[in-house]
Image (tube, rainbow, N blue to C red; front, side, top):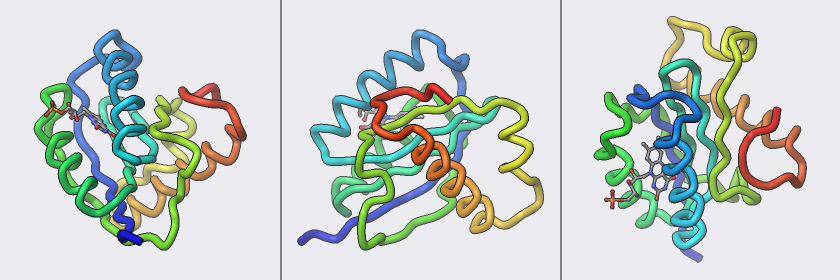
Length: 141
Ligand SMILES: Cc1cc2nc3c(=O)[nH]c(=O)nc-3n(C[C@H](O)[C@H](O)[C@H](O)COP(=O)(O)O)c2cc1C
């Protein structure tokens, strides 16, 4: 079996949260990831995106490059990479959550290392995923 690869990056959003551009993007991402066998989670905290994606190694490499070049965001910075044994988000091609201030305060402490930040982001995503149960796409809280 081909090895799985996962990455987490952060970037600065250049579009409004839940705007038409963002919704169109997420509709596209959902279909594309289904085709490519990619799963993951995208959270937005204010103007910042954090995205976790996982899939076959070669596919992830290509998609990361395409994501990096997308003009809807800037300042793409990888904060973690891994080769997980199994998928963390097997049920979602891509989930999207816009955080409220309280959640942001709990999960995004400033001054930590990239490693701490990535661990905290992943924990938040897993918590959200567990809450969501079987419901499909988009975050209902
Ligand atoms: C925040 C953000 C997240 C994205 N996530 C994905 C993704 O998970 N999968 C994907 O195929 N494209 C994703 N994209 C879109 C890619 O950047 C790119 O537009 C798309 O893959 C099409 O490639 P192309 O622009 O080279 O034609 C994302 C873009 C942004 C801004």
